[in-house]
Length: 359
Image (tube, rainbow, N blue to C red):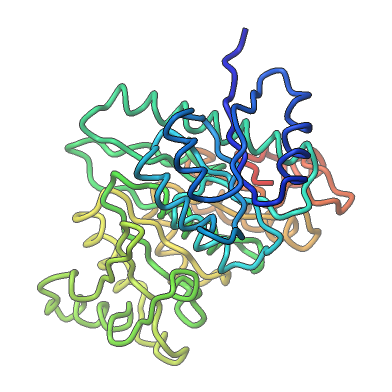
């Protein structure tokens, strides 16, 4: 018999708690071990019951879900939090993930969405614990949902890995994936680079202001050989990652050259275990310089005709540039969108399989 996934439900509305418990009661591999009416009660029950998954409502009166998640992440680290909210805005998602949540469900959600999320999070956490058991000297807090296999750990004597997150069409979730991938790769010395030089959004999602610390200040000094330390230009974020932001104004992007970008990434690779680069959607010399240097290119697409068309064109160019399928990994975002296009249709159109999917 497969392991039972022990679930604690946290919601201040009794009807919601009962409804969730009934939905999960039909699943043979999921056991509801308790239900809490508040964040504080959740902390007490989680410490006693040690659940695998905590379904956490974000809006509660005494202690909201984000505050409770922060406490649970440190006090009961074996419990993975799946956040629930009627609010689907990016700010709620960002704050939840930075607090330690592993998944975010927007109410109302279907029974399939709920159970799939629980099983996926549980599986990822088991895999994380297995890796920790094999490598006790290098603990990690897990990886982003669909891309764990695409970002292997760095060996002690190996240079840092560069992972470029790219999408030949905007609006496919590229920046969101880059930020959350960086925020979940704890245990490694991780740097997140906003390479969308004119209109970067990493600072917005992480609530950071570039001020005088941006990529436009670093690259000219690197090219002149005057950058003594990268630390001056990197911002330490509370999520445990270091961030190099895009320029504060679009015209400053002209200061950034392909050779400068290469020098910057090589310098970051030498001082970090993992460098995650959020690339711009346009395909130009600077973007190619980043993709050339990257060990892995996570290429985002969605179930839209224009996105599929652009991916097909990009794959043709990638083949001409000599990028193999082991380097270019396709990530299908919103794979459960009801647009009349199936994953199999996408794979048939582009001539290769999708490597990872995100619902």
